[in-house]
Image (tube, rainbow over the protein chains, first blue to last red):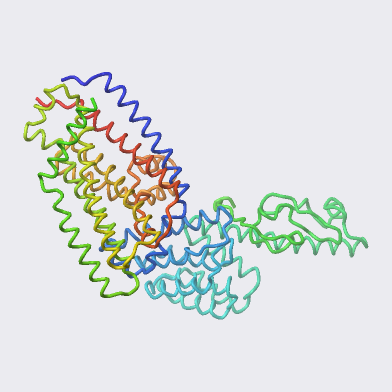
Length: 310
Length: 258
């Protein structure tokens, strides 16, 4: 029996229409349920229970929860989120299901600890998570690095940071930078050189895109902070030479104090204010910058995902 | 045309009943009443939660198993018993046969779900002595479960139209599992790049999205269900079933039964 040409045409057209309709409806469903898939974390928050429920497929389930964690953070961060309440339980479940998923601990260290909008503002939870990671993976130097990193950047606990770097440097196959960091902690704790060394290490040793983008953003901010301080010192030097503050960068160039019009790491020229103060033109483009911010400026969610860009 | 579909559907329903498909109700009744009595005695303030979670999960699993194992035999059994030739010798079009079979099994599953739902509500009444307003969301969850059955039935029928019963069962069950993680699959796809992203996204949109139809946990915690979700889930399930049935019809229309 030959298939009916009429039926074939009508049914084929219907099938294509239904396919297009299903894709459109799925997009609507995703919009309606943007947070719903994660809500189950609130219902089944016990990692032990989930481990039992995974029926031995905890590795696969850990991957699913890991994906959910980074999507949750990425989605909220993109929308300038101030509340990351589910990030800690999602990462806790992920690492409980797969205690050897080191990238999850690294992610937790970088995004659980900082205050919103750049993190969940839970440094103690981040410390606990990384300590659990070290207990499960005692031979992984990267986890000691993360422990030192949180203690240094978020808690300003330099002795704990030095201890973590030192312990990590003793692990077999530890990156040589661990010894350097441990040694430099005593001399340079709290200065920008140390911070630069830490963020550079993060960028060079971690492959996760979001973590690297975060490191780049911090490095740019540190560079800009140093430039702002240097420019303000040059303006003071100009004043000592001429008796008045410069009205423009050109005036400084003509007097030989400056080589050219200074540009910030985001590509914008700096603004020279009266009294020799330097200000960022587009502070939103330099996440984490602390110097040269306009008066009353409140940092927004400014992390850009361009880790390879600088 | 409608008469032919209704006739095939009612025959499919009768055949399922004759095959003792509804015997699962006995197992379900024992399970739910046992659970109700057990949690009623333990009484740790989660009786309703346990009854709803266990009841709706059991309804969903029982239904999916029936949909797959009856669905895969809908076409192959007719060929094996040679009854298909008798049907197609009459003025019945092949697409009417497929649609009729679908409605027959969908009807069986709906009746099955209705009786199991009665069991869940009876168990709920037993453990909490009264119904409460949030129980209406349990009805919505049951409705979503029926939509889930429609999709799985259509898939089983699609595979049954060109493959052996064993392979059809494997394919249908695999798609049920994949579909239950459809949202995560789209999440994975979104994290890839280049050609892989296109391929993964295409696959993620092609598999059934069953995760949006599973609201058992949220209704067990008395969370309301938005009207938008009901609307979009209904439309999605109908459109997806339509698409799969079209595929089944196209394949079945080309099969040579000589």
